[in-house]
Structures are given as C-alpha cells and as structure tokens.
Length: 413
Image (cartoon, rainbow, N blue to C red; front, side, top):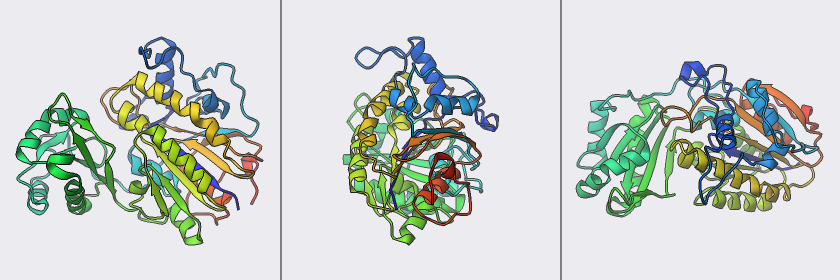
C-alpha cells in the first residue's frame, strides 16, 4: 500500500457553483477575484506583496485548468507547464450549507443530506430559553453579543465589558455556529473550553454544527487580538467517513490543524497543530515524513479563511497563497513512488464579496504523485469523489457515496 496526503486550503473556492444563487453567491469566485485584483494592482501592499498573483507550483498542478473547468473562464498561468503526473479538475458540493463541516465531511466521503440549524439575523439571535440555559448551566453572570457579527469586530465592541463583568461574548453568523469569545487570562482558557462543552450539549437539539471557542488577549479594544488556541466543538459525523474506514482497517490518520475538531476527533490517530499556515505546513511535512504505508495525512490550512477571507483582506489572501505555493516543492520532494497528494478546498470565502461570510463555490481538485499519468478529471458532481479516490488508492472497499477518479489518473488497485 502507498500513502495519501490531502491538503485543504480552507475557503479557496474557484467559483461556478450551480446553486450559488440559492445562497446569494451567484458570481462569487475567490480565486478569480483575487487574481483579478492582483493583475490590476489592487492587491499591492508595501512590505507584503505586489504584482500579478504568482502561484507557479499550484499552476503546474493545473489550478488554472481547474478554474476553467469550474466556470468556463480561462486563467493565465504565466506560461507554467503542467507537471507530467499532475491531475486537475473541479468539484460541486451537494451538501447542505457552505460551512467547514459540510465541506470536509463530503471530502471524506460523507455528504451532509440534512439541514443544519441556524440562528436568525436578529437581536437577540438566540432563543430566550437557550440563553437562560447557557447562563444557568454555564455558571456565568450573563452573556454579551447575542447577535450576528464578525469575530474581530465583536471583540472590539464588547471585550472591555467582558473583562469588567465576566460575561462571555456569544455570537453567530450565517453558518451553523455559536461562537464564544473570552479572554485567555481574565476568563481563563480552560474555563472557556469547559463552558463551550456545556453550550455544545445545549445546542445539540437545534442541529447547530459547531460551537467555537474564540480566545483572545489584550487589555483594550485597540490591543485585543485573537490567539491560535481556538477550539471547535463539532457534531460527530452521522455515518462512517473515510477516516473511520481507515482506522477500522488499522491505518493511521494524522490530522493537521483543525481536522480533528471538524470530525469531533473520530477517525483520528493523532492531531498536530501550529500557529498559522506556515507552522501548519511544517507540521504537515513532519507528518509526511512519519506516515507509513496505508496512512493518510489530512491537513487544513485555516488562515486563508479566518485571517483573510472573513476579514475581506484581498492582499493578505494573495500573499498567503503565494507563501503556501512557495513551500509546495518541500511536499513534492517527500513523495515516494505511488504516493498521492491532493490539494483542494472546503468552500469559498471571496474577499471581494459583500458581507464577511463564506461563499458557495466549486472547489479545485489538483494533485500529483510519482507514477501517475495525471490528466483532466473534469467536473466532479460531489466532493465525495475525492474521498473515494483516496480510499481506492489506499486499498479500501468502495464507500456509499462518490465515484473514484483513481483509474482516470493512472492508478490501479
């Protein structure tokens, strides 16, 4: 058996979703709009980056071809030749929602066929009985926020009052989430985690996908800063995923970043985390070194989404893509004969779009591996095709959802 490496560039959509209008996202395209802004000089920032978007290694895997498959629009790859073993295509999500669990579960072979619960865009956003239970069972003097809001903005707005009163900041978004911000020192990090576990239990009947701990530090609105001690408390997948199937077979699944949280730590052998994309890349490389036959390294690079997509920072997103791309040769160098590397995304978060939320988009499916013939895998009708391809590569029986493209890229059972 060989090994598989699945890298998710969190929120790096490529537009074209057939049902984007249902989500108010018709025309959203994270990749194209970043590239367009760079080409027009609107993403130049002194000391950070300038000029056209430069991601030659992803281009050599067929990123531009994948984008064309998703939307029909051509993309210049600055003359970059495709690697001989590279494959490229795009995938349409069939799951409900446009959030992290839906995208990742479907990538891992389990589409979300039920509807998540959401909180209305009202003030207050949470039902009175839920708020009362949170205060009572969480043993806090009250809560602040209780509304839809971007994370950094609501901390600036309520952070000082939170420190003064001890009331945690509770908020939501268009996604199926209840987020809780609290000061790491004044409230306490472990206390925040325990509080989130209480809230997780309370929102289970409402089908809320995630309760997210959002710790921060600083003493004033001008100095507040979120830390990398975020923790997601997710609903466990309702059926076995690719990860469960690998663990049951005796293989290892090494989770990088928030992958463990997304799957409620089910089907995970080991979790490795780092502060930021580059530290996460270091962890992924270490996991590649450690992976054995039949193992999967599943990595999420969250900064694209949290630091740049939600903050509508086009230049920051572009610079992060370029930094990630510069390190890809380190991953290529670790591939052994028969290994499979796939780069993809879980949803979009177009930093040029209105609002601060995820965008419904198709995702790139690009990759390579020594010994593969590569080629065009076309438009996949579900993200689950990714999971089924990894499953076939690692010698698992076919799952219930998705169709493998393993044979199409030159793989063999």
